[in-house]
Length: 265
Length: 74
Image 1 (cartoon, each protein chain N blue to C red):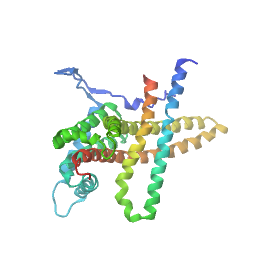
Image 2 (image 1 turned 180 degrees about the horizontal axis):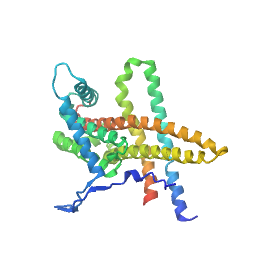
Image 3 (image 1 turned 135 degrees about the vertical axis):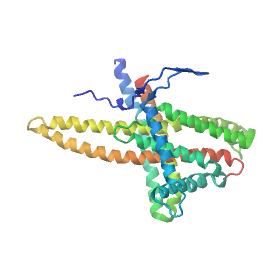
Image 4 (image 1 turned 180 degrees about the vertical axis):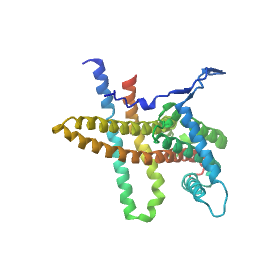
């Protein structure tokens, strides 16, 4: 039996080799087309195709247009409208793009032979740092130095406020880590568990087929593991969408704090 | 004890952090369901906060998971 290697599915492999290219400030950068890059390209193409097909602007929407309008309405009403309020409208494109990109990358990882781009910590960390920097930029652009009021709890003794300010700052600075780790951990964990149960199907099945005797019970275990694989794959589809939604919702919560800083929305 | 096995045991112990996340998720969804059954009309409006709470509860468990990975692969 081949060695069971549940982490092998997350290996980044090169498909098209390019020589390293010097980039100013970063040194030599390897820009080869890997499976990670390939699946990001597929996701971007699918999203573009989806919207070209959906944005026909017909008065009576077809199926694709109805789906696109439903998604757009969901993000508009529940996320930017529901969490940030009226001032959230300008951030709708950002939140909607993040939601769609992460949802498509997660779902592409569940296709047979697919590669989960979001199971790479480098990818989720980049997205998280980008989200964090956007929140910072919006905060300083909207409030100037008044941005630091975010960390200053009012209505208590100044010494207490100063103490809480330290805690508030730590919890603010830890956000990109938690954003990146949440998506990475969920994707990695989900795929590893499915893989381990899939190896049980083959391992126990092969054991159960050896002659006749008590080891035939292995076939029952194999069948139960197969049911487990089915159920976990279904759960992974739910998690793929929920994690994209959670990322978009948290982006909205973080933006809400800096956009409505002096209004207490 | 040889260091390699101590490392594996440590990584396994780090995963006990997920107990808290599991309990937290149970409390969260249980209370949401209870509230949703008592007042179904208000259930849809609170679903965003349900998922937000879920994300935040999970994060604490994921710190344990990352500690496990760090111990294993460092």
